[in-house]
Length: 199
Image (cartoon, one colour):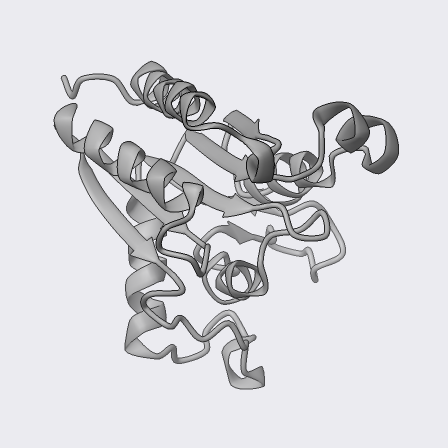
């Protein structure tokens, strides 16, 4: 299978990068092809120009490549920190420019855009790995875990993905080497559960 892996963290020594490395190596070991993008390393431009908004807009070559990969992927893995209950701006810009009409969703004939979109993504499974410095109980009780809503309902559910899994690792800032090692084993286990050995 072709699996798209998108990483959004500016520090190459971050735990997010360790997660991404574990994800990619596990997928490769299981015989899958990986479309891997480190958005910060690649200096992805998150700004959506007005000219790109229409469904049939001509797209820059890089955006066409991202769109082609995400539309043909059999699975998607997203890795990013929780910043203000949201993905980093560079990842939000990737969503704006790549998870676009005609690629990830469409409005049915006769619907001028006010209805419920029809999902177009080929992938049936998406996994999101997050890191946070907020304890889980506070995340739920005070903030209601906005990242769950964003990814599960507002993005992947809307785009036709029926199997969604998300795991949050916290509290990162006080975590020990032993905790991080245990967490990476959980990452490997999650990937093997949803994207096992290629048949």
